[in-house]
Length: 299
Length: 299
Image 1 (cartoon, rainbow over the protein chains, first blue to last red):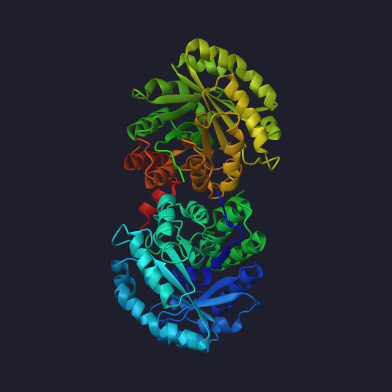
Image 2 (tube, helix red, strand yellow; image 1 turned 90 degrees about the vertical axis):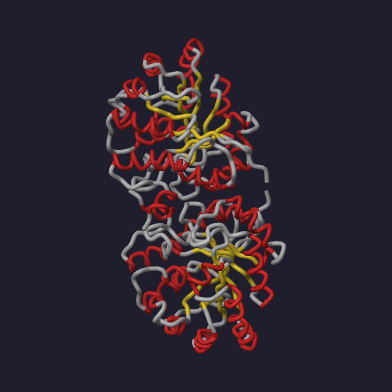
């Protein structure tokens, strides 16, 4: 048993989380959320998405959010840039770190971003070139790494092929997402064993959804495979877009509770994090998705 | 990474689960539940408790339940017998397997069963002797193995001392319970490392509560330590008696989902199990505590 001594948490709540909440929230509330997450000690916060508000109305105002947040030195504030237009908007907003998004499943790619996996990777080429010019770092996401809502099983070799491409194109890190949350610990370990042959493990991140209650176990399994970066969403924001009413992104509070329990350093303070989660849950008027916070606030 | 090929699930829903539900349910509904669990393929079902209905009204009628269930050959139907009086009532009801219950925390023992740990162990002596006479097997529980609601931290050596006593007294298996659900995967591994020095690992079981969302990870950690028996509660029955509104016993459906995913055999059928859970959730008029069932029934 060998666990990493440090883990970096990538907070995706303000983007991946709020994007999937039915209720759009104001720029001021988003800014408050990002500032509270900064105060909690997170070193990576995905702030918004530069995509047409026609498609994703929840992400409208991302430029304003970037303009108003209190940036702390050493913290990365990222944005999703699905195409060159979005990338240029992100640059205009002063973004220094962008993320691109591909799928490991052909059917999911077609239905989610309206093109094949290869076409999506081709679209990233001009973004990667522009990012290099601007001195901007790019993080890659691969979705459906442990199952697809349309195709079912997804082979780890297929995930490896997409992750390898993103890494070869210049993504400094590739985050592997169990988009529908159906993966279990054994499949998680095999995933990193296989993908780890093509992309160094210290360039891989795990992005788990708690839909089937397996996320914390999958993170533990990933830690045992030497993975040191995990995406999570404050208060479990976002739910599961493929099963409304079920959980989606694992709650950052719950991941931190695990890591604190394992004695793994993150630089994040659980009490401050819980405050950030309570603040946004109040804005949304819905209960937290964090099991830890539910337990602590139960009567 | 070496995982067991088989796991035995000990279904505690009808006893440990229903005992902690606010609403008492009828003998007929309890019988239906046990029969549905038998049909799902479980090989151990904790059916009831022979304790004064003055103290635990939810367990009234345990003798009638034992009289009416359809017993399947090869399945153990257990009952909690906290004292000799309860043991004798259990024998009169035709029970062939009983369980006794001790705590790893002195404060919990005092508050929960009104005596010291040593006194509780002394009280079991006549039960163990009577059980031997009757040819009845006895399972031991130790609670608060990863934390106590009154004392906080509990040392694994303290758990080992109690587990060793129960094993020496004749319990064929000792189940270690994280009663408040605060344990994480590292503490779980250390627990079995330490207790495993005093009691053979194939005589130990894990009993995890999902209050902090850690149960599935803790079970995975236990599997990696060679533990092959786990207690769980259909539909997560019972909630957490120490934090009302929070989760308690991990849901059997969620544990089975993990084990199925790991390719570990249990003899239990997930679809039948889900039916059993839906049936009792309907009786109680409350949503299931199983994440897997929530995900599958979300719209």
